[in-house]
Amino acid sequence: MHIHEYQAKTLFSRNNIKTPKGVLIANTKEASKACSELGGGIWVVKAQVHAGGRGKGGGVILCYDVEAVENACEKLLGSQLITPQTDAKGLPVNQLLIEAGQNIKQELYLGLLVDRQTQKITVLASLEGGMDIEKVASETPDKIIKFGVDPLGTLSLQDCDSIAQQLNLTEMLTEQFNQTLLSLYEIFTTKDASLIEINPLIVTVENTLLALDGKIDFDDNALYRHEDIIELRDTSQEDEKEKEAGEYQLNYISLDGTIGCMVNGAGLAMATMDLIEHHGALPLTS
Image 1 (cartoon, rainbow, N blue to C red):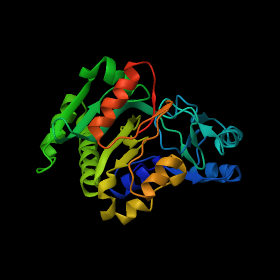
Image 2: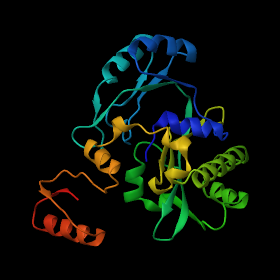
Image 3: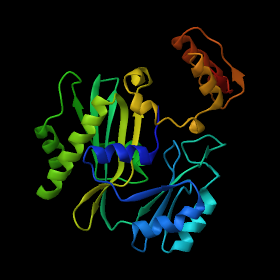
């Protein structure tokens, strides 16, 4: 299950991870009040959808006056945002997060995920944070630090120190980094997350670490243990057919092809779809 950025940041804040001050709105008329509440003279308007790549899709707009904020809100609210991670239809923008602009000195990347290959919780960290982290991962993977944690063990302060040293962080930033990473690990394990990302985790000119963005995915199989997480679900962001299938406890995956597949096992499903693509077509469903 996915949640929105503003929801992820609420969880971050509850666990002592610093985030920028922000205001959630669902109506353009609320924009001016939000700017007044935040103060300053620079704001960022961010579309709240369950997809990455929002900046590349025009869903993150930097504004230098209130009128620009209102125009950005008018443009985004009610639209369908298409990003590199959505299909051709995009996702509906029903809410916007307006945040005060930050003086950014450096952008880092920090994440945790379940690595099925190593059967560990893997910490990912990089000095190359920002919109092109996918490019970094594919073209220069050596710039991403990986650290595996045995799920039967825990992440220690010494482990965090080791990662911070590889990032060449100062003593002041190392202390903040360690606290942030330990808090992320606490969220990951106690809430049964499958992925947590802060991209970017910024260093401000005041040498403060801030989670400028936040993404959390949760293990669907563990949701029965977390009523508070289930309440965060936004069904408007889900595929209608997949949502309906889920109500009947069916596994349905919507794809963009033209040939439907009805199979009785995951292995056969993958093999069938591979054969379809091998012969020049694309599967529609599985």
